[in-house]
Image 1: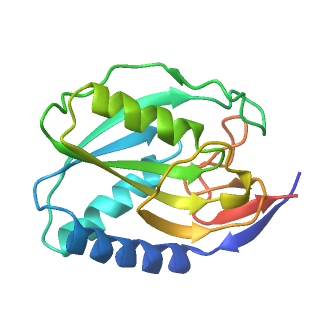
Image 2: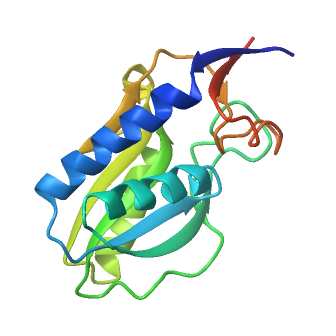
Image 3: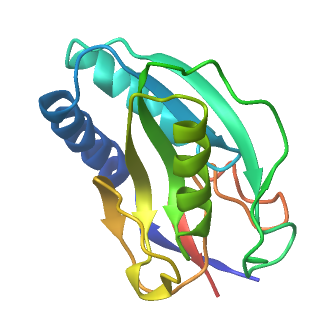
Length: 171
């Protein structure tokens, strides 16, 4: 299996700075980031530092959802595999690595609302709009990509390739 670069470290960093500026312009100053583990951990780390450069200092929490297992295709069944942070009454920015079918994002949004989030916005580093199976809105998108399987920058294939500093296409 080979990995062909799609977005370089520099391209990712520049786009995250742009996302942070967009988020700072549209969200209230007091909000909580809820990252969807595990794929988003690198993205969240860089995003919160970029938000700090805009003057924002959000709280940060994570939830763990799973729909892929060790395969390249979503099982289409989203499972919560951890606890929900205390978000009642909070404005929440849901952060994910990639929106594919939309099922995980929709599940997470509904879960956060059920637990009392005042308002929920979504941010994803990558979006595959042609793979969408359910209607969901992602207010902040880093890159829109074709229907390819990607790894790197925290995104894995069978728990491999998260360490890559770039996003690449698996051939």
